[in-house]
Length: 267
Image 1 (tube, helix red, strand yellow):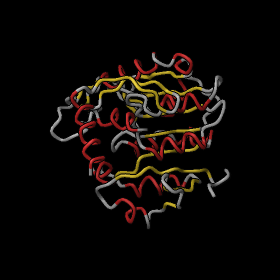
Image 2 (spheres, one colour):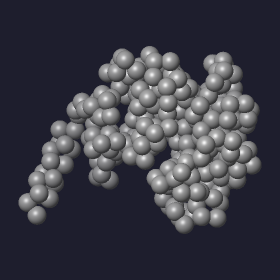
Image 3 (cartoon, helix red, strand yellow):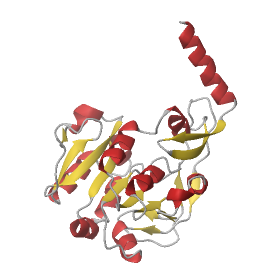
């Protein structure tokens, strides 16, 4: 009982004095405990299964395309695990999150040189001069204020076009977490997927997909049709269109890992 009270007091203190600097998994971060992602970093990591995946599967010299980098909670860990010859192309169109990502890069000069930041919106079309409202901030507690939706004027492009423009000759991992636009991003990566056969790590959130007229089953079916097997990131159990809703229903989300059929599959 006494320990619970101590933990409660500590949490209140962290919310009253929320800004601090921490080192997690060998990476320094400037955080604000009133922000959900930052507070998760403070507690250990944002999406522990994603950090576990990075530690296990990202190897020296990896080239990664991260769509939806936000504050860099995973960006810098990927860069660290990729070694001095690895590269992370981090896409983040919101100014609020991108500035925090750049600040966290400044705190980690040993790995920051391996990260290239791109101010782009990724979809399955290429458009000029669009302005979309995007959220990049979520409060740790519902009563806390968060940053408002941000109007983003960034160019809308595709993964295929981005890969062409940065002249990639290797791609080992595509990581996507863009709040319901994930399927669109994959549809704009057909050439890239066929050419490089990268690992694909993607958020599966049914309600977010439905807001864009799709379903997580579209993601699984699409990748299956391109020769990929899916697994639930938390325990690497097979993930299919028939069992995905047993895991997430229509309200929660999970992360899926997709391996090309010719690659070594998880045990």
